[in-house]
Image (cartoon, rainbow, N blue to C red; front, top):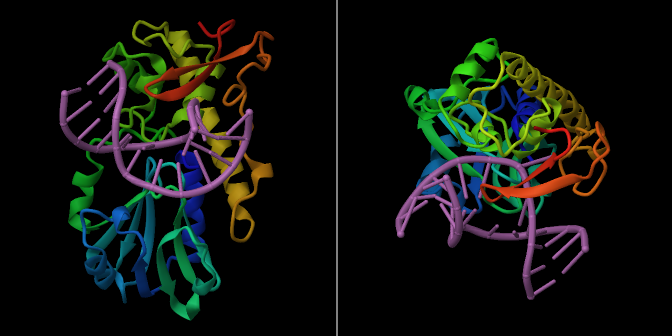
Length: 269
DNA sequence: TCGATCCTGTAG
DNA sequence: CTACAGGATCGA
């Protein structure tokens, strides 16, 4: 599920529903999620702790608890983190759960169990986030930043833009959509792009993510789960064989870095 | 820089 | 049955 917009939506909801709550009990049902940390140690560290802030950096979630404890959560492919009214009614794929006050539950659900969760101290956070690039929806992400970043690499556009060291939070779907908007070929490097094209790409990234956040927030705003009807409408992602919205040629799918890239061979150059 | 790997679920 | 899934890391 989650790229930056979905993670952002998750965080906003947790701020409303979980911040200010105390952890009565914590259970790690799948130790692999917290490896190499010890599950029962982690539980004992957080039981009794008060959640006082939720922070997002790229696709990373930081849950700040009392006592200077910070739980780093990464949802990876299928993770989700949300609050339910009664912890007893959690789903089977709840890999980690927290009983909050008045019996509510904060659930880390993850069918594939690829997500990760690890406990740190406040003072470890800078080191932890070291190597995570700029926030694409912040003022730091400028056309100049994009230009300097792009000049450093001859990797295919798609792979470069997915590199979290440069831009934090862009994933497969939104990269593919941003490249479509800028009409750029995902296979070609971005070094030596004209300024106008760079501006278009910058716009594409910012717009796609902004729209993504809007729909993700709507999709997650219904109580409990998330509403597919509000999902971000993709122009090329998962549209292999369909006609391009811009030039009517067929959308192609190719593998890049082991993942699927969708693009229009007609107008993306 | 590539492929395998971590996992489970779903679609074809 | 196989292929593939919105991610990241590790070793060759």
